[in-house]
Image (cartoon, each protein chain N blue to C red):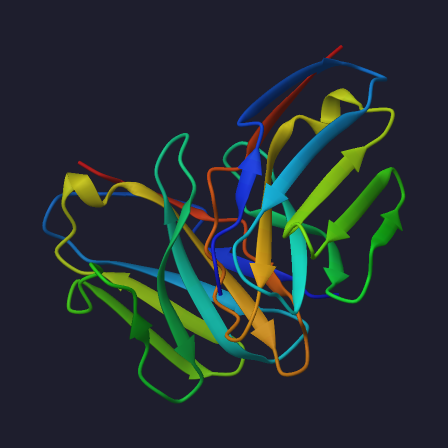
Length: 115
Length: 110
């Protein structure tokens, strides 16, 4: 149990385009989902926390107008990188926490490359 | 929540040997969790230890928690090449935001 999927697993796009990444909890309801980014050989950096049906809470330094997060249902959260630039190239990972779980379960990540 | 700091930053051992990595944190916790990340993948949950527990086992994994020293250790016994990965701890208190440290990069040589 406790499987989280992400789609796509990788994406290459041109500078200036927008990219949407989906995060789904497959076998449990996720009241809270988290979005992280990770640069090569570095740790995961928390970008934002999203609760179902409410606005996401962004960490300091993360542009909320650039990284749009929607958590419309208990099993789906989306991260949209708007007007992507090469410096947005990174590994984006989501995690999900259930209503009673003490644990976050992570997706497999999405590799974004902006040309 | 707070950031855990893993130590050492890198560890290289021979297959069959034991690997020990440590995690330190600053304030009281509800629980502490260990995760593994293989290169280019997401994090896999390994084990959760609660603040009132001192030791927990799961297969070849043994986790200890010393709340007086605000530290935890993860021991992997009889390591295998497949254990090669980065390992992160997540001390959890209050909110469930995880703030990760740089992790321990474990390399198991065949």
